Length: 575
Image (cartoon, rainbow, N blue to C red; front, side, top):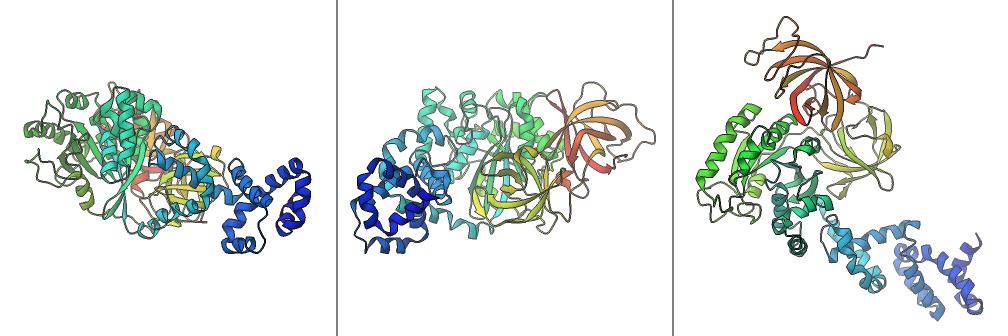
């Protein structure tokens, strides 16, 4: 109590307080500084003009001047103590990061270390001015954010087809990554003898991904065109990371299948074990309706923008995509491009006179709007969670709308939570509609109590949860037969759970849709059956008829996708 009282006292009666401070400089001075630290910035921030007026009449004595200077220096280490401080420090760090990379996320930490050390002192002094600089950049975004339609685009395809490079190039072309950052990446990549990888580093941010040149986790970034706001989900192409890719595809509205036109690369990606086939199939199962096939690496010496090679890739892909369930006339669009040079991504390529359609980004902009119901029940499958001044969860809002301070229920644990703040693609908003990728800060639940695959619902309309359900399954690839008692891994929306086929109910004829009268004893590849499945733990799911996004799933085993299916009905647990 005592020292707290003395701090304001010395402000009001600075003349009285001056003499004792001079006498006991070491002891009283340090005490004053430590206590003045939370106070000074707050007074300045809250009431700007009065603070100046106060200082005017009182002739500023030297101790007071040194005091404020000292407190400014101190204010850095003690940042988290007071709200006023915490508001300043993030902006400061953004400013500092802004000197090296422009993006807040990619490589901000290591890059920013060199700069701030020398620049610290001028920055502290000019803190008041700098505080106000970043705010106008953020402020204009919320008003026009809701007008633009949100579209989530997932980049899929075989490993090394050029997904991350195209993503990085798009971010550069739309101005989301500045030239200087890319030059820095290029320099670093050259040092590692990997100069063609520098564009992918805009999305592959961690060291392991950069060293190996392989995406592991789903990279996120966003860019805007005239009409739409796009979130890029950069899925990994390697077959070991297919589960991550499924999580990415389940959030997407639109998939971009990237294939390499380079001799030999297209063939390996498309053969039985290649990821081109599996990814296209998984995207379809995850509910992606529209597919854009980018034939990448057209600038390669073995291809040299040749129409024959482009048509050859197209001819091989169309029958397969048709088999997966895409309609070649309506759902699929082919286009040639080069991720490394950026040809035909934003502007038409001169080398490619035979392609008459729109380049990639204008084509995305011209796509018809997606129909989403904002008045439906709230459904937000959780993709990821972490601790940051509370519990933060990430996910795509599938239906309904969420606003600040709303009470929601976390299923299947039935925790009631409150939304403290909403971020849509790093921009804070008060409410969000369906299709947006959100970060929510929640109150009333611990981070340890949430798992990916949990779902946020509104209390009036909870989603269904259970362990047993009947589903129609198509066996896509399996060497031997599948009998009751077979175990696999179930991927449904963002949830991953172990599952057992407990019973086979009937076979379904692919052509006529007729169901067999007798129960099959087994099913084999390319057959369609209705089976009863039971998961190891309780999961959230809906029937495909009621809610397609949460009623379709894939079954995987031994690193391969075995079957795709849709939930027909939920079976109540026997007491």
